[in-house]
Image 1: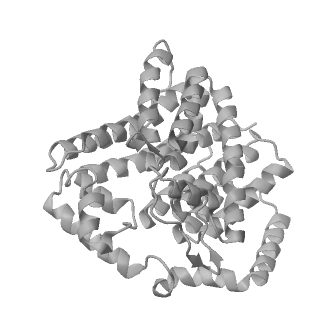
Image 2: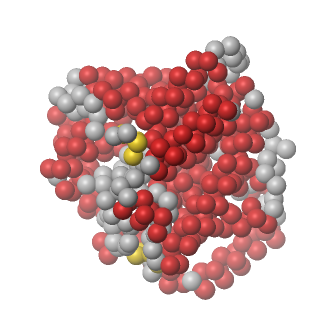
Image 3: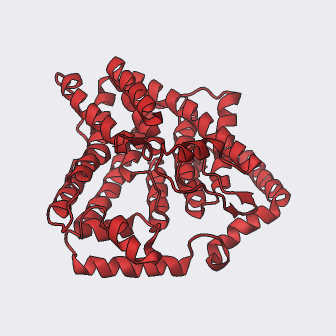
Length: 407
């Protein structure tokens, strides 16, 4: 029932206002990914509808700019198709869904965005602000009360694909799962929303209001409350996009230094636990260095068995994790890619990150490249359930556009 309601609300938006509907679907995708609908998941059907509507909505559209990631997307599409075609177990439905949602959806967004940039920027940023308040406030609420009533209800009714709630503690506080299936997904979304909203405020695309500053503060807390080291590290990498040493006055450095010292002294034990978790992974709940090394060895073993095309889509999830418990929750984007789609998939993802970096380098200010580096680091250190790496492109597109046309 929940999936049907969410699905028809978003379809209504797509039919009424195609551009606004696509913005909502992209921003909400990590939340929508695990929601059941007619034996599949909500994004499966939404992606198909978006593609069908694009034939009518974009039929007469002519834009000067070409999609900047054509080559990597073609390689990724080829890796999906060929790996599935030559696999012992084919998953044709999953392959089609992956091509539509992972590849075609960012392409369609790009061309819809080109039609009316100013309006799409406004819609996208406002939607990020609203979603950001939901994510930030609920994550803090969850950590304070030590429970997640919304996800508990969705799980108990069988409306989402989730076996148990995240109830672990790290750094002395409950790990915040928010409205997602895992704490890492919650933190990743918080990083995306913080970066796009803060950059919009920096470039005057959003007003610097008290409520927006409060929103950024709540998203910062969300990142910390997830207790996910890769997310925390990626968050600090993103902060470099906001630093301009040439224009930064000495009084600002002094203020930041004093604030940092005061914050550290106030929450010394909390920050000490975070710092120690990066160097002493054995004594922290969750993945550690030995686990990651074991997973890497397994990924290499399966890669060597089928080096070019891998073993087929979902082979890691359906076969490897069931046989090798060490691979459960593979702690990197690259491990499943190596096993499922082989070197072709690995090359496609490398081309994607290079293409995004080149896209950032077009303008005079190269700062958005820190966003790409942060997402690369995050997904290399951890696997993020419900988040597809290509979904970062719409956020990157707006960052680059705002960077080119600072108000």
